[in-house]
Image 1 (cartoon, rainbow over the protein chains, first blue to last red):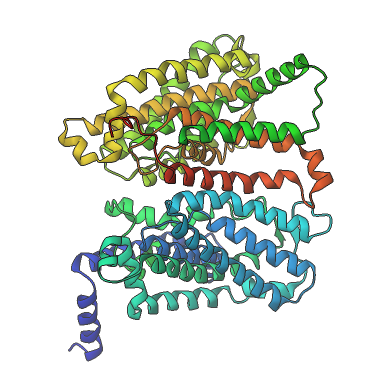
Image 2 (image 1 turned 45 degrees about the horizontal axis):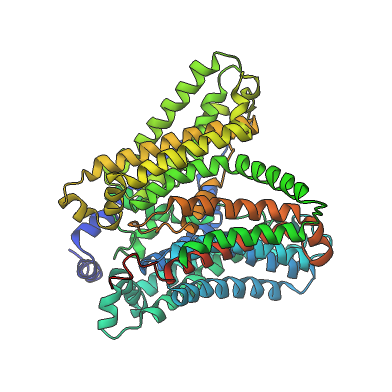
Length: 291
Length: 325
């Protein structure tokens, strides 16, 4: 006999997702299971599968969280190629504050606020200048890295290319809380996707800006909100990323981060021949791809 | 006004960096000598990017993009470096390098035109694939057979680089500008469905553009290896952004439908002058700035890219039929 809970879940899923989408989620679940089996088979004698899986969470946390950040932006039809460089600026602010012994909390808050502000700034710039997001963020890719290097050079005495983080109290979010931050970020993403109207607005903007305007929505405000929400996810990613490092190297760190975080999208598009980066697919599906 | 923006930025850059670069000219001949050597250095240094940017301009005109261009040039260089540095290099390594370039271009073109994979996705995949192949060919080694090949080094010097760039930009560029192909590519970029209805073989043209870009990558690899002599698996990492930035800065639209080869030419030089100028003005930076001047390069490239594109898109096009209107 089928339990009421199962019936409820089935009807809920059927109501929200098309049959095709559910098949894809099934495909992704099977794909992930096969990958786990492969990892299990590849583990050498003396290794522990449980340990590998437990370690994987914190290790992939920055990429997964940055993937969520990029997803929000891609929903609106934009892209942010500069997320890696934004993380570099956040890392430099964190490094400089830790080198000046401002206290761990101040350094963490500095890192979070920097990421959020720069992401929102990208959104503002795209809206105000009215040029494609790919160009603004391509410019941001080099611009922010330069800003990070200048900040490090001004903020540190005798800056020699890197900032060492020696005090362990500055590293606990990355080393102790990464898994929890990932879990919290994922749950937030899921709650947003299931219950929030904001995500639907992002998708609406990504589908048709004109339709948004006709419906009385403000595309510029939606775009800025998307970049702000993306900034929140990215700030979590930045915090985990920079607090796992022993040295902050503004010229080298987080290179290719944007490409790495967007790979699930490209992979998804490649497998399912989705020709548009903007799609109405949901976090659930994207989450499995990111995994 | 719009067509003067890029030359104006370039000239301003040269004047500014000459001014802060501690150069003293005692006579006009002195200035001429400096200018000749500066231009020659700039041209030979920019040759690989200039050649790759030519192909990229055509690709962007069709609303495509090639993120794999740097990996492609690196792979061609790695394959050519596997041969001995003697006379046989000319009939073994060079034809093979050309063949590899055309096959790599064909791979990109087929993925995009035949399999209908979006250009950004196809070339992101091939970027990683080609880089992986570079490391497969080279391992952790760095090979440098190029200077031992008789006559090869010439392509890395001013006359060789000038010849290649002149042939490409004046020969091929002029041919392209006045040909029907240009209008076809722009139409594909502007509206591929309309282009198909207009009888343009869209798939064939796209494949041709990516194969041509492969050929440009080969010429770029020749210039790069002839100047730098050695190559490794990680060579030219990040060059794709430089190429794309130069093309976009030159006024070519990323959404396709408009391209400018002369703009690309200036775009490459604007970035090269900035790079070279900041290096030369390090002394001025130490005296006047609280940070290393070289760090400013990243910031300025970003500002120039965004500012240049903004000016290109927001300033009005020159009206050719202003009298009639």
